[in-house]
Image (cartoon, rainbow, N blue to C red; front, side, top):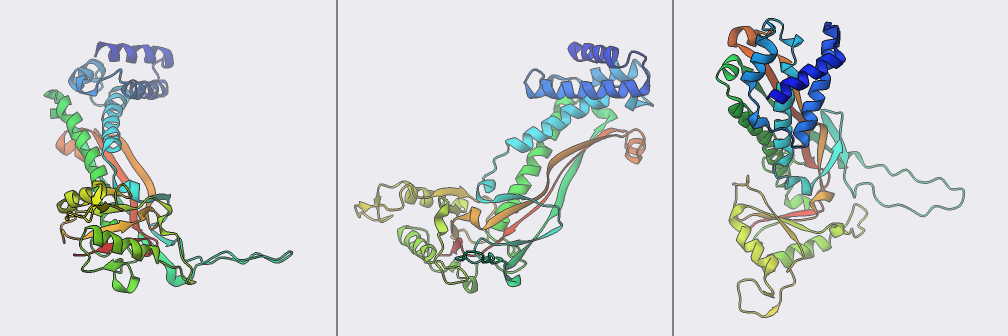
Length: 359
């Protein structure tokens, strides 16, 4: 803690020799950058910082309670809480990201075209114009993007009772919850939970030729879905190479063991004494959808990344504001607030690369 106070004194001496408000703002921005660097390098442990000591040294001792923005406190506490939030968000497992392309977007609703809707390239003669490859309107899918987030408030009680550890833990939980909820949104699209993955229509349906009923997970089920995927054709009735990527199987928790046996057994058929070679061994990856509860015998197989996308309007961001002049600051003794948010949406751009299988 003493080192942080010394850091503040050194930066204020360097960047604000006259102590003017403008000089102090520059000094405090630089202090914030240095705090962020120390946290990133592991030279500063957020859980061992006392917000009460910082408050007393940087605010109370300088009689800045009514002019908090003139102190270094908001920059330091803001950097600590923001770093904890973002680190927790980034550290959360991102299994669904393995199955989607992330595409930058600046739209609330994106109209996207699938891999096969453009058709094929054609032979071009000398001096002949290249044909324009345009997707038909009915092949354009829509993905709706939304904003998600929450606010963490630093109150007078948090500082007075020196609840730094609790604050850091809450910041960590907010970051993790943001990442977890984003994964839930992505898995909902991948498995069409709620029927919103394909322009508001059911994605896995007999009309889209991507639904296999009475096809339980096992050797025979895997062979059936692989055969169906190899037989896929585009809008011009040309064969498409579905497995340009290594195939992946999504299963609910109830089918994890069955999927692992199919993936790892040396011999097959699965569940028999047959000593034929297990053709499914090591061929596909397994991803568990922990949010699927509708039908625990359903499973999905294919090249997900060729079909699904995450439209990212903006990635996770953390903003801070001082609460002394806000309504919350006056009514609820809020000293500072931190807003964590992201903006995006998940959906399918095509229907040909993944099958849902139902037992």
